[in-house]
Image (cartoon, rainbow, N blue to C red; front, side, top):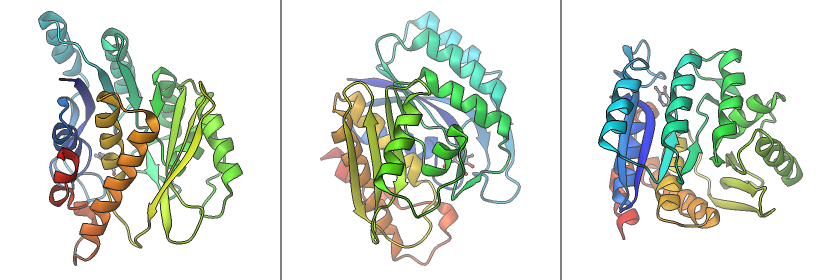
Length: 273
Ligand code: PXL
């Protein structure tokens, strides 16, 4: 059985980061070991969450992992809180990557804006950190931030996307996937580029109007599970787009507070089939 490390926070309320990564990757038949970077009472779209930073605990955990000789087929990083923490995670990656893949979701913002608490210094550090990855999966906001270009909004061409993807691979990761892209009304998905093979593709699903928090983490988790199982990038992205769309569809009819995330539990069975 394949084993991956999932390096991100635990937000106790508001499905995102480890509370979606662990069940999704497990459902796909891949062992998921959490390396928790922080413990929050909720994610940061709720007001005033409590937060325990776990940066100084990480070397204790990974030091023990070294002693017991655990290895990983992949390392998946998501939301982090600080520049210093990215240095500690970089050290973990250097020590544990072996022959496995490194998958970085540079979680920092959405809808053209940084999440609360993130700075320009963090953006620059994340762009550098992405150089350690084999695959990066920013949304359009994060892609523009890391490339130092203005947010391109909603009105762009396929040529613009290809230019962004090419730019992203110059940060150092051979493969880049940009999420949350739309080239026609009613369709939303991801665009991907592999600088090694030159392969470029788009993968789209039906767009449902509304705001669906945590879907970037769901997309990334399915990609990681599929890649760990040896799927090609195109298959991994197709599976991730399909599953994310199903999560949105099953949630869209609810009268709900979107900050609680999507009802992925109700469609998790798709991944086990
Ligand atoms: O879904 C990304 C995410 C993860 N973790 C925390 C967050 C967010 C986005 O707001 O606040 C703590």
